[in-house]
Amino acid sequence: MGLSEYLFVFAFFGVPGVLGAWLARTRGKNPLVWGLLSAPFPFCIFILWFQKPISEVPGYFRKCLTCGAVYPWKLDSCTYCGAKLEK
Ligand SMILES: [Zn+2]
Image (cartoon, rainbow, N blue to C red; front, side, top):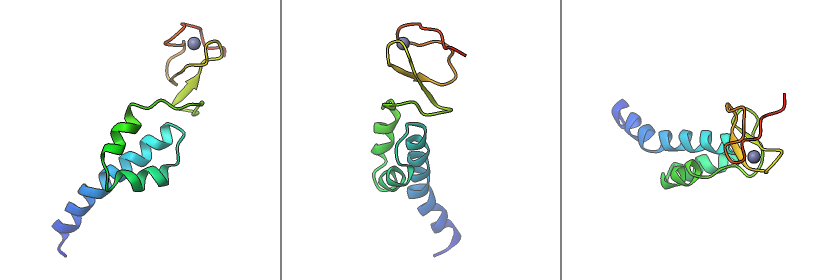
């Protein structure tokens, strides 16, 4: 195989695999399992993309102490009940 074929294989399986693994990590799931699933089945990325973690994932998602909803880490108040983050 030439270099261009390797690049094609990487783009075809590597990119969705890496993307799936990264998304899985941000959602508190097993990156290895989801990376391997996403490589041959890129629709797994869409499943991960729209799925919120069920528990807090430090650096990515925070769990609201008031209503229990999970919202993005960078926000300082809950997107569901508006409860402010205690620091
Ligand atoms: Zn809340």
